[in-house]
Length: 144
Image (cartoon, rainbow, N blue to C red; front, side):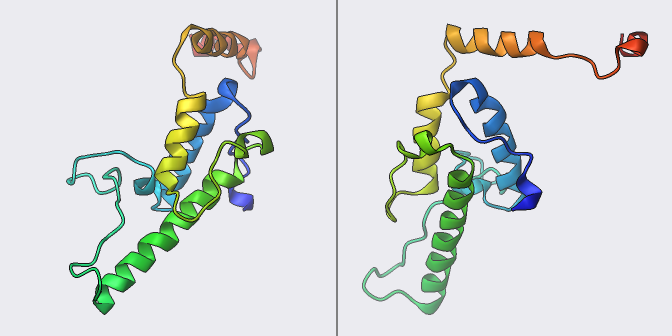
């Protein structure tokens, strides 16, 4: 996964927002964002939430329905793999490790634990912004 080395390992609240942004773009580039998205606009196919297809007759799925279900399940496993790959070991402990848990459920669990927008998170973000520095301060007038 060398082309994904830019994605930070999620270690906690302090880097959740950067991790989430990088994961959103990566999953989007791999056409997997729909597995964690909660988008409701069908005219936006990249953000429209994907749900597992169901056969018309549950006991007798057609070949096309079986194929669609299989593709959805494989893509969901790929999405879970991307998410899992960029979680630190302690954070992996809060993620259910069973086949029935969807990527969206895992995404929501992580978001509830680390995506808080309370005062302490705002302080952390403010501190990170204050720590940013220009690469070349000798020509600072170009940036103003």
